[in-house]
Length: 259
Ligand SMILES: Nc1ncnc2c1ncn2[C@@H]1O[C@H](COP(=O)(O)OP(=O)(O)OP(=O)(O)O)[C@@H](O)[C@H]1O
Ligand SMILES: [Mg+2]
Image (tube, rainbow, N blue to C red; front, side, top):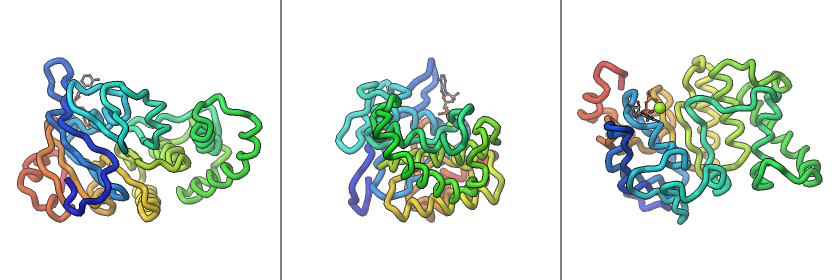
C-alpha cells in the first residue's frame, strides 16, 4: 500500500496461481501507484512473468482479484484485446512483432488499432491519421536510434532490437499503464542506456510502469518502488534504498545475481 496515498492504477489482491503441483503465485498483494515506476525483481522462475500475464488476461489466477482503474480484469472477465483498449500495453519477454512488415509499419499498426478499437480499421480515417501517426512513429524510432533502419524488415532485427521495437509499438498507444517484462534483455549496453533514457522520458510524461528486470543498473536507474518475488511470494517491498540492503533479498539472490 502506498505511503504517499497516490492514486492506485492497478490493484492486485490475494492472487494465487498453481501449475500442476507448483505454486507459481502465492497470495500476491500489490498496489501500483499512478505515475510511478514499480519494479518487480526476483530470481529465475520466481513467478514474475506469470504475475504480469495474470494482469493482461493471458493467465487466469486460481483466486484473487486484479483491478485496473475500476475495471475487474480477473479470471478472464476481460479479453486481452479489451485490456489493451482499456489502456494497458506490455512488452513481453519474447518480443511479439510483425516480422513481414517494415520497422516503421510495425510501430504504426498499434496506433491504428488503438484509434479504431480493432485491427480492421476504417480506411478513410486511417488515411487522415496516417501522416500524424507516421511522424510520431519516426520520432519514437529516433529516440531509440532506429530511424535510419525504419524501412527495413522487422523480422531481421536482433532480439534486443526487437525489444526496442516492441517498446515503440507500446508507446505509440499512449497507455495509462505500461508493463515491461525484461525490456533490456539481449541488448548491448549502449542500447540499454538509450532505452533507460527513453523510459525516463516517458516517466516524466506521467506514464505508470511496472518493470520486470534482472539488470540492476536498469532497476535502480528507474524504479520508484521495488517488490521482490521469490518462489511465487513477495518477500520484500519498498524504496530502492531499502531493498538494496534487505537481508531477505540478498538471501534470495545468493548465487543467482548481484544486488
Ligand atoms: N504455463 C505454464 N505451465 C507450467 N508451469 C509454468 C507455466 N508458466 C510458468 N510456469 C512455471 O512457473 C514458475 C514461474 O515462472 P515465471 O515464468 O513466471 O518466472 P519468472 O520469474 O518470470 O522467471 P524468469 O526470470 O526466468 O523469466 C516457473 O517454475 C515456471 O516453470
Ligand atoms: Mg519471466
